[in-house]
Amino acid sequence: MDISSEALRNGVDSLSSKYAGLDIKTIVGDFDGAVKLNIINRPALITCFGSTIGNQLPEQRHNMLSQIWAQMHHGDALLLGVDLVKDTQGMVSAYQDQNGTLAAFCKNGLTVLNYELGADFKLESFEHVTTWNSQLRRVENCLLACHPQTITLSKPKTTVSFAKKEPLTVGISYKFSQESLRSELRAAGFDLTRWWTDAQGCYAIALSFPVQPPTF
Image 1 (cartoon, helix red, strand yellow):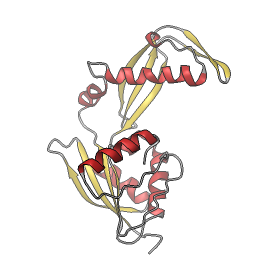
Image 2 (cartoon, helix red, strand yellow):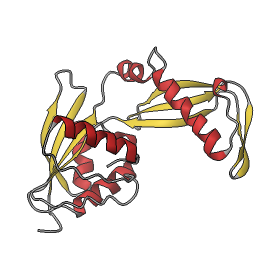
Image 3 (spheres, rainbow, N blue to C red):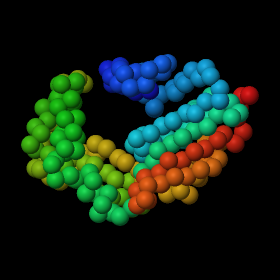
Image 4 (cartoon, one colour):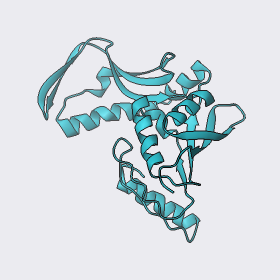
């Protein structure tokens, strides 16, 4: 499942060339909308890797997990990949990379806004900054206005003003602990039963089963 049909086609081509005989069905969709899994064979293992849930707000995660739970049968399982809370400097450095890769990625969002909304953002007028929000336990990627400026949009016709150093949040990445994830899964109807981490405890894979599957 992905919002990009091209990415899905590339993924199918890559997997099919490596693993002959796979029957791959794709879903073009958005995790914030209706998650329709269309599961045919049982039992099913539903996987969500790449720390996808870390880029969602708590209410969005709960909605996604609850929708998945509602489509599960007895014996189905959910396998999640999550990024764990770790050394603050290490987390920030991973995003504030010296090569400027993420900075370029974030500024490209301004290019998209210029194209899609007829805006007049100047990329050199914003500086990429990464911070750790300890209260919310998430990494926040922002673009700071280098100077006071007013942005004009033509679709819709409006203006947006920025003060110097005013942040424009462009991305968030929540980090988890075993207990915090267990609590979120429980609230959506799951029981976390297995937990694997890398040697450094930076990442985890969590296996959960629906506590009371709605269908059998």
